[in-house]
Length: 184
Image (cartoon, rainbow, N blue to C red):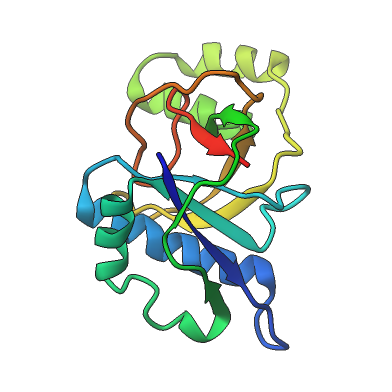
């Protein structure tokens, strides 16, 4: 994790920064799945209420150059400003960037439990009375799963800054609950 690549989406009258980031992230997801290595992590340095307009990719110089060789941003280059692969500057710390899954629809969860045979209809009715819907204020990107084809909100959490890096693998979204990326 000694190198990085920074991509800034540039909104225009037709496409918002959020739409462009979602499209960019979808293309990245496909490219990371194609590579299948788990050696590239992501972060969103401008993240606040939304992920922001900057996507930062973290990895070794070799991994980032191999990703770039795939020409994965094809079709979005007019809407992106991309730095070259560069050495990480002075590091403030390390952090995880992970996905948070929110169980926000009790009816769907109960219906699934009945369909799987985990609950009876009567048990489901009783549980539905006690379960509350959960919400989150975390920033998210609208994505489409490569495996299921379903659209969903991918909620993103930047973990607390740490003093030591933790090595590990990243998923095909460039996220991990354990592996850290350098924060600068």
